[in-house]
Length: 76
Image (cartoon, rainbow, N blue to C red; front, top):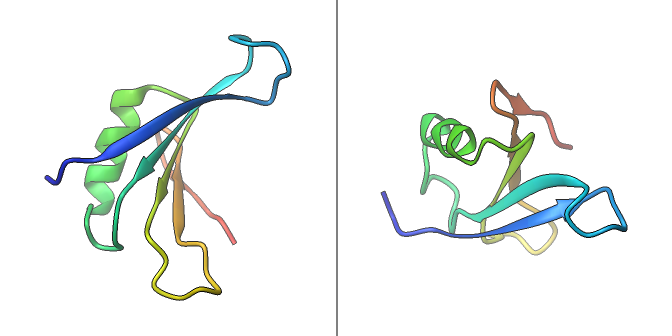
């Protein structure tokens, strides 16, 4: 598996340390991680949601996938 960078955020709050935790993983290019690997990473974070961001191949698209611990969440 490639070395990945990620950021964790506290979202849906204006008070520090009181919102929902969210992880954003820079998955580099589409296909770098399999769906199974993304599910495993999401489970390891243990947050309600983990977002996988892929470097855009097309300037008109925002290539992300969103996972909760049990499933992928449709984004569109």
